Image 1 (cartoon, rainbow, N blue to C red):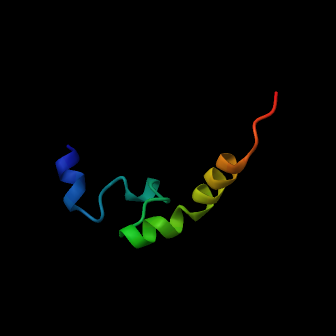
Image 2: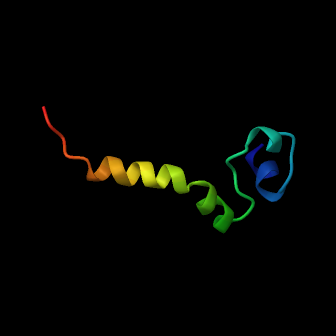
Length: 48
């Protein structure tokens, strides 16, 4: 099944995958908010 999805740019799941980019560059652009959130988490100082 995964082989079928890899070659197709459009399939029946595409409308449900609003955060999936069509190219690596588009994927990076769509992930900027998550990347920034992770960056903040990594810089956070852990206190108990």
